[in-house]
Length: 328
Image (cartoon, one colour):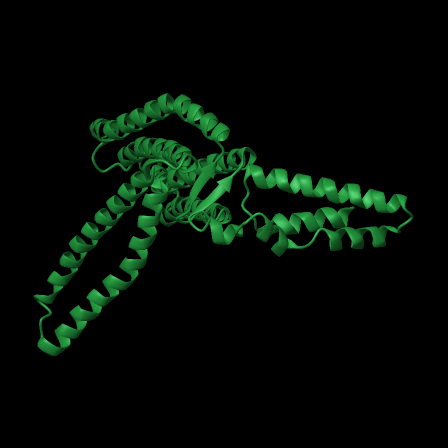
């Protein structure tokens, strides 16, 4: 029986993951199991029954030809289907991803604050004056390096997990029920998103005010003033990053905003074009400089190419959007 189930899984592994395909897979498995038990009742051995079932039910090419199907790679080069369970799993991953990235950014911002905090406390408390300045420098630099190391480790680990979904330039396709469910979740999330962004903006605006007030009480040369500044900014940026990633996740799942098929396709084409155009521009600049000594004037090619590339990107994106609307 395990052989039959594994066979069915292998047949459908590269077919589009749609409700219709799931139903077809379950129907195929059910028919094969029924045939398997019929053969066992006639006295066939387990190996004979399995071999007969696999021979009678054909192979993947026959199934694709019968249902006029293309493989997942052929059919969904620009789109990928997510079931309800896969959408929930992706949302859980992105929540952890958002928390990790936000925490890593927070650590990077507060790392110099910890260094300044230790050195500022050294200046404030006379009892610490017996400790040499070199020792204080070591005690202040080590936490900074550790915090940055932890942040980089978080970025690398989460980046590798993000790559496992292989969503580069691919729009997500959902069932109507799953789409409606996520749209309701997004609507419920938006008030929290607005409050978090507002609080983040307030924290960043208050940061320089806190810096000025602390300088009045502690003196201009005390590093603790910068500690307060960085602390407020770190909290604000944490809110921006965490809630921004969550909001972009809803847009990605719903194929909205910057994650519509048209915009993702335009982004893919733009990146491919930029990988050719800008090296050519650099080559023209260097070549004209050596041949005609135009180093002081040929640099104009870079802003010209940049402007033309921006026009091309906008025009191509608009073309794809209008083309999609025309199909509807």
